Length: 180
Image (cartoon, rainbow, N blue to C red):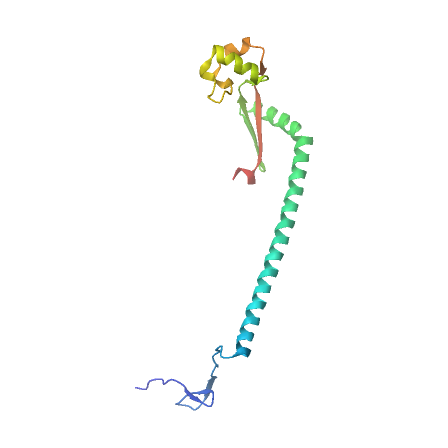
């Protein structure tokens, strides 16, 4: 039974002891031993740091450019929604009503409707606060801000510093990419 022997090192060459064939070259190992080798290593590190800095600047430029493109696309989308959103909403509502559904679907997304109850907007916070201090103290915070949400609808109807905002249909228009 013969075992493979390790190559022999002869004058910097690796030689197979069985065949005498040169199978490789010794790789000299690097060591920092003097100013020349120290500066060589520092130059390599410096060049790598330069490459890192270049790549970071390149990445930032690419990211800034991509963000600019995203902003342009958002403006385009907002423009389309401003121009055609009401028409799409109207069409989707007619289609959804035909099917008794609150959502119209297509391959690219959905237009859904939901009922939003009417609310009240406090037009004069100072008047509301003064009123609440006298009539509804639970609706006054310690820092003396009026909490109109604690005043009942019936009372809000009777007070002049509340304005009724009618209920409406809220619309959500989403592409399939936004939905996921």
